[in-house]
Image (cartoon, rainbow, N blue to C red; front, side, top):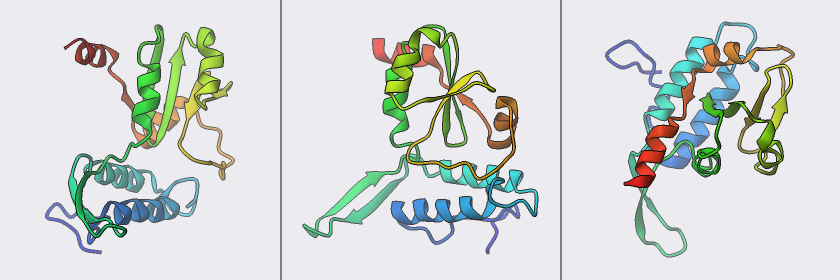
Length: 171
């Protein structure tokens, strides 16, 4: 694979469409995800892949509708589906919403929202004392028991800024 000027591998080289980017990300995750590849330390590689994948956010892509033949533009959002879940949680008091890799985690005073979180598709991890959500199906392949801090260190962590979101709603 070619590298860029910083000697970093460009994992998404030659990806020209949103579909190609998503397909390439799935291939890379299968190859480098720590749960799938135990022979080598893939943590840093997976972090770099996630950073490069997220760098495509809001990039415009041109496509052709195969039914109509018309050209269209579309912004890429690697977190499709996440925004609507976050919007449903954003005004709940006493909780923290956090994105670790491609998983949403909810911690804090979640007991009053237990039924609502279940309704949204969240599951509870008693060992982590946190609720988690991931789009699509997931089957655990690793026997590792990781803490939430281990997950944060492995995949990175972004907490949803509730104050910023609330200010945007006011404006």
